[in-house]
Length: 452
Image 1 (cartoon, rainbow, N blue to C red):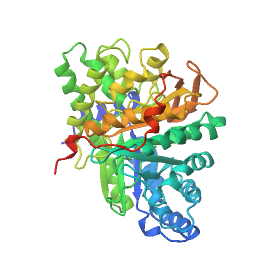
Image 2: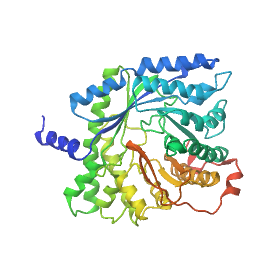
Image 3: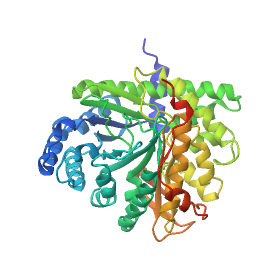
Image 4: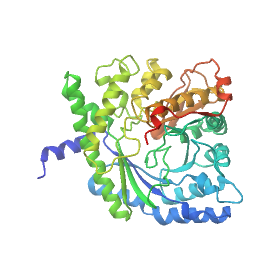
């Protein structure tokens, strides 16, 4: 039976509380595009993406109009390109990046992810070439996103890859310094990367996935905050229940969109990602949810506990509302993409160290953080290693998306525009980890990896 109150509540969520479906992401396998000739491979990659995704944007727009649900992004994720490059006699992965960019523009999508390599246990043919090409690839494209998985609970952490990625992040910033170092905003370093994540910049289409699939990422921080504001001074048990009920409603909407998109595009429905994805809009902030719980400023003592409550309640409510849940499914805390995080960083209550603690209980990790432009590569590598260690030991996904602000120092600002937002340059420790990082090798997998 249709409940008028529920309909009106959903309308209010969309109009006043920034409720939206953050992304419909089509995952496409490129394994059947492999060829020894790089030009042939590029043509096959472009043709397959166009064949599969040419109606993606149109379908998303039709669903928006029919159901009145905003769908902010339409995206594509593909098989890690390092695997495709491995088949080519002449390994020139930037050519494939240009093919991805051309397809993304023709399809009209916001981003295309999968310029990626999975090196958590070592380097396969094609991996080194792709990783070394990331700075150039991200500097000559606007829609291509890149990710590298350098660790997992099962395999430990590949410290040779960690050391390399510190240099790659810094070089990417240098090559895009004239564009606010935006290349680094499209580059994520993962531990325990999921194969079905619909969110950028870390999305790629895993080898265990179908040939083509539709995944959906929901949003709704503003809706959760509004629900807590209406509840007033209830205890934390009641706070958790309110978040669970709200997450159920948000996810139900995402499930509807996912199934409808799947049917219209003629491809299987994959998962709904439950992550609360913020934006720079003032009313659409995870940080403001934490402050609504009673914190004076995000980053103060108690923030990690409040975030743990939020993340757990979102999962408990959301998992009941979808037939298949996957991706990252938690609460995102990207600094430049969250109005409350930006303000907390500016006032100094939110630090890199506190963000690292927060990532032990939420989704992803140290995300969209501007750091001084003179930060050495080994410091970037060490930050990546710290975050990977949290993911490895806790059997969860963690990631790092740092932006070295070339030519800028602490207190200066970068502005990317759109959902990527902008924010202050945050300080990092100036003590050197160079000797530790230069040792290389692998950090062994923890005991809990032996679950067979």
